[in-house]
Image 1 (cartoon, rainbow, N blue to C red):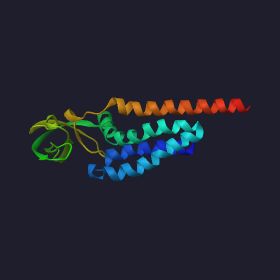
Image 2 (image 1 turned 180 degrees about the vertical axis):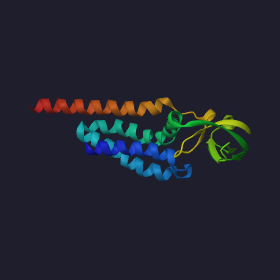
Image 3 (image 1 turned 180 degrees about the horizontal axis):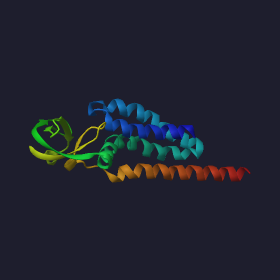
Image 4 (image 1 turned 135 degrees about the horizontal axis):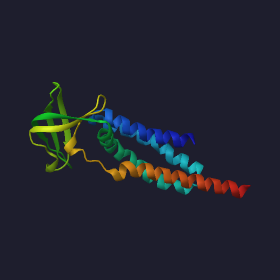
Length: 179
């Protein structure tokens, strides 16, 4: 059971740190959290049967990686305060897979923000007024480009709950057979 808790805590830490740490350090957050989240799969195999480890790996590994970014965007939707700022300029940063658009913003409170958005040309926001989601500790986001996957954000916890139900049911069945 402690392994399961450690693994789930690592996924939660990945979501929180993914919202706070600058994007260039995402890999430094992802690697330790991903390794620690593997404890969930190991603990599930010890609780239930060994074959549950494979589905647990299939949930935890991509789930942690996706929730690092999508968790931040979902948290900002829930906790962020919308503010109207002005985009002063946009830099195009070419990339191998996806280009990145760095938006420079000035807010009425005097804050100078730099928000990078990855994606195709439709992710670029033209200079002018824009709504920004701000939070005291999390990175700001452009509200119009805050697209997160509800399937992942809600699906990973649902899959984890189903795996825990399966593991405890199989464990109870095994204990009942031994009695």
